[in-house]
Image (cartoon, rainbow, N blue to C red; front, side, top):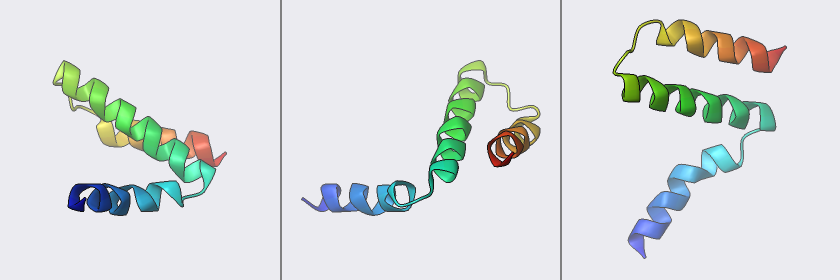
Length: 57
């Protein structure tokens, strides 16, 4: 039961975020997963900035 509460607490900011923020979070998570798989972290900050700019526009 404690684990379920902790997961809910972690997910709450994401669930209550605006659709734009959720999209940014989802896309950044996918980017991070792909970078981990390739073990290539070069330019991840630039990629994250690009995602944010695309969603904001």
